[in-house]
Image (cartoon, rainbow, N blue to C red; front, side, top):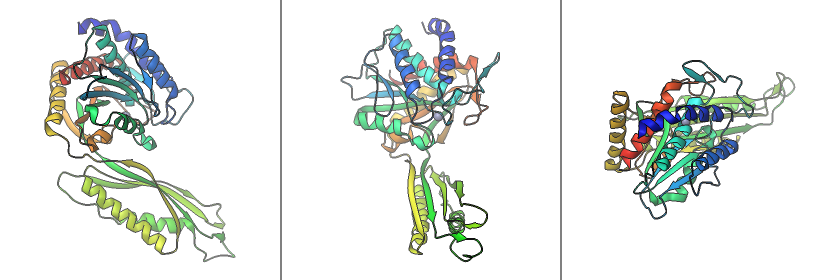
Length: 375
Ligand SMILES: [Zn+2]
């Protein structure tokens, strides 16, 4: 039954990917992709499909009376800020090339196709499945889509699965992060006549230097990092800079280490403030680490994925840690994972590509996995 479905829908799945690639969707601006996904769900008879306040497209299947719902999701947003069509889009025999094609456009098509398979074959999942094309996974989207989902469905979610990686990899750990915009203002002045006045660039640079003097905590099995990503400021070569700002972050896959870094950053910001500097710190990102997750549930997810991949590609799986939509449910203790479903590369670059044949393999894996997990 599945092979017939895959053969019948190979072309259509590729067409969905092509259509979605041509609808750029920076975080917070996913409206057009959301509309497309809602229409596609409805095209094969999905009922009660809706778009929520965060621009998540949601198709609940047999969820009405269930407190054991499985969320099955992929994100519609991409890291690319363009709101025009992508000029890089091209195809050859083997691949599709387009910014965002792998992360996470093909996976959105797979969620749609999995739902179609369930409806066409009248499969009624015992505990209910929430098929979701969610918003705001990337960057400053800060997992808003996943947050809203968990807020709305809270204790009713038993498993949370996001499709957002290359095939063979499963992510069960959560890299947490806090991100800040830091603005510094000073009196500034003419570079010659006011020489000696405080300069916002040098004051901000001192803060950057202090960040880079932090010794990250060493804890077995944990990785902790920090970064200053952008910096800007000043007026001209002959002006003592009046303002400067930066974006910075720290990350860890361990809750305690993340808290350690939070303290260190706060100390540095406080010291600058206490020293009389006009400094404004705004937290622009807050991704939690993994909480206490039920081990049995987590193992069930890993086993279902391992079996699926073994059956379909005859490969072993790799278990990894990353920052994904699963961070939110994982922080709440809900068994969750990001599963890999395509062959491709160059995520977050304009040269991103996906192997065309791997797309239908991914649909196959998605369907098999979900059935194993919800059996
Ligand atoms: Zn992604």
